[in-house]
Length: 242
DNA sequence: TATAATGTTTGAAC
DNA sequence: AGTTCAAACATTAT
Image 1 (cartoon, rainbow, N blue to C red):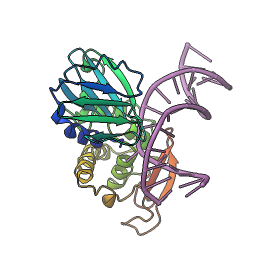
Image 2 (image 1 turned 60 degrees about the vertical axis):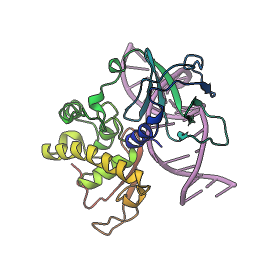
Image 3 (image 1 turned 120 degrees about the vertical axis):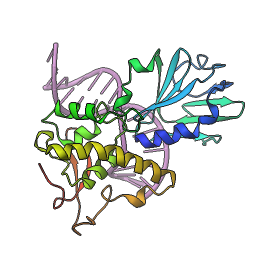
Image 4 (image 1 turned 90 degrees about the vertical axis):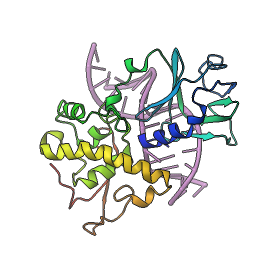
């Protein structure tokens, strides 16, 4: 369930529990369950891939890592890591990482770095990119401090869209391409959101897990790239190595 | 059935 | 002391 747009979908799915009191807490997470019991949720927020349940004096951070999932008003056939019940329904979180964050979220998170945020700031992203000119673009795009919410699917699709080879160094990429990179990181994320809501995300993949380049009609490269060593799918012909 | 994969943190090893 | 790297976490589609 990982990338940023999926967390936005979750946030929308739980709006019915905003301002509601938790009447039961279950789960095998290490966090204190009694801390949540009888507390009212003030808001749900997200920062990149982080889902945040806000209370008056603290927050619960949920990270789904690679295989985490959730259900709303349903259960799976195994105990949740955290399950919250309300008078009007329930949310269950499975195989995720859960942490309490004390105090004000703005002290921890820079929401202008979240590609899905209303206050996303592309100029700050650009500064952060140029602060590490030797970095490969495939690593830079996945850097959560720069592009919070971007994961491997978005990385592959963005680089294909803008015809840039994943192993290009930031310092070699022309300035107007850097602008395109930043714009598409956000654009594609919103396309991802729209398609995922219609359960047709995969249908629109042009690079991720694809075998043939639709533009050149030749086989895609598939390689672990960058220091993060994540899979890149790219066309060695039409994606330029800068 | 075995494998690989939308991710991150931790702590050991160098 | 700073960097690198494997392990751990745990699910599901292919």
